[in-house]
Image: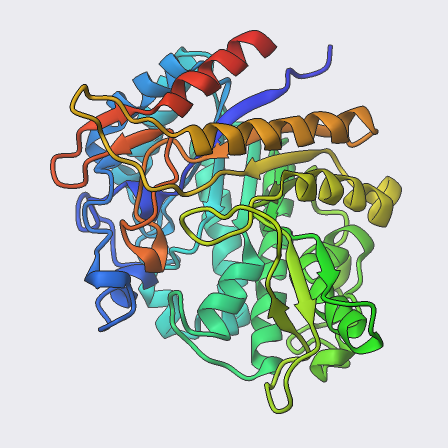
Length: 439
């Protein structure tokens, strides 16, 4: 009997847990980064976030009320292996033990992500993702976490959006660790993340578990039919959509010559053979399409962003284009053919300006329309042959949104970040009704 379609929500440890110094957890790169002047909007801190570390039972009850049959969360590397390598922190593991058991008691499948951008500081100081040894440290951490939870957790995601962590954290410096590297060094960061995935997947599969990789994808269109704009769009597509997918499905890197790269720095003999075929499912995080133009002279990159016209935008300013998700899911099938494993939409959602009414309600019709449109896009893609087996809304609760702090609200549940009071929004009720009707 085929597995049921997964209807879920997604979150990440750094964005919801808080308790950054409790029970043996050591600092992550975001603990340090948010203290830099101007790094996070208005100096907001993830120190408390949604206090999920203490309020996890309340949040699991919300998941039960919502009716999801899967919950994607991330495991905090510095909470489980505080120094990045070495002894496992039993108190940290115990937190995820409790969470997993509570989810299973309610018929909710735990779908953990092993790395959602919170690298332990000690590893960063030793070179971070620029160092090959970080990939081996990640495999050790993956093995230890699987040994602790693998008797109850079958499906694992290794990395979340490595392309974003590579670009924002190591090229543009706007996310932790805040580095601005040259192109060859940025590509070495990419390779070490892929190597980490391959090594971790080997550990997971040797234990009879499934390994998935989740990336951020964006269908790309050129700003015009000019050869220059088309070349720029191809370059951006190679970087954003293919850099972390071609190696795991085809065993080769895409053409990166537009970035002045012949071979990817850091790659050694046997690496791509290890990385190839290392996924049992592909996670698709989708928020918006990209429109790409030829770069201005002296920009340093082979592409530039152009405005996506004719679409409403979210509070983040991202264009709302559900048809882009349908196009993307079908494009992956066309591009990778029989090499493509089952797909899971592991994040999809929108930020809106939400407020609690005097009656204690949160009305968010724009979010409902957004989700309704994107679920319909998944339906259309499946009808046209896309093997999509799950859909996860980003996110359950309003949380710490990286460099935006608490200014962007993506949740189905409103959180007062002063009192930690949770208020389900109208979109919570809408999604609950959708799941009930589909199941």
